[in-house]
Length: 325
Image (cartoon, rainbow, N blue to C red; front, side, top):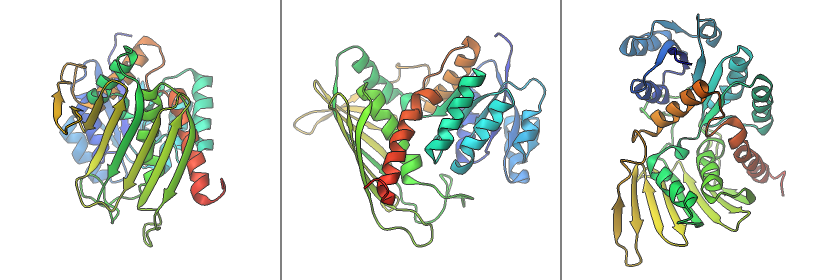
């Protein structure tokens, strides 16, 4: 496939804009349609990025002439249904994390992907960030074996705001959204399926209706373990911080920075600028999506590859609701 790929993007919020910025750096791809809830704001974003078609209805985007693929950056609760809508329309689809907020919905997406043979990928960006790629390459080369991952995912989000400080139309979730990153990454880096998972959560927020604090323990079949702490109550520093404790080295990933940690507390910066063609994980994720379409292959972070993550989240959700006790 040598022609320009025509893409629609749904969701013109903070993450949708990150995708548009990344796609600007990728040759042979044109965003031809932008869909979002607020038509005026969507028109503003479309004008900035030179996108010709604007709508509030995904079905309108799917009817655009020559459309090849869709990237979904919409609220979590819409992901699975919209992914199915795209596949049924014969379009390749990349859906931002999480794939779903119920395992049954994720299984429906996978069943349809297998039926259609289209590319269906999920935005598990940690697989693509150069810092985590560096560690993965060490593991693949047999130079490092994960013994334990210690991960902190911290936000200060006591009101329903997005990454740009704007009001959200939906409610975020520590388990189905933020834990999904680490649950998938742990199994991916350990190279072994998760066989044991436990979770506890703090008080439920009286207005948002979600737990604002959570702790998760994971164990892989090969014996590696992971401890994950998540909070919407943490007043800085914010973000997700990964400590990889291996048999030959310890690494700490903070955003796109990676350091090697030493026994006396010193940290040696690791240059990850040459790991891939970009330092932008979203751009690298999109590059993989488009390459898989052109090459007719399964992408890294395909729906099939990440579904085991959602099986674990389902198990943890049942634990937290008392059904798995």
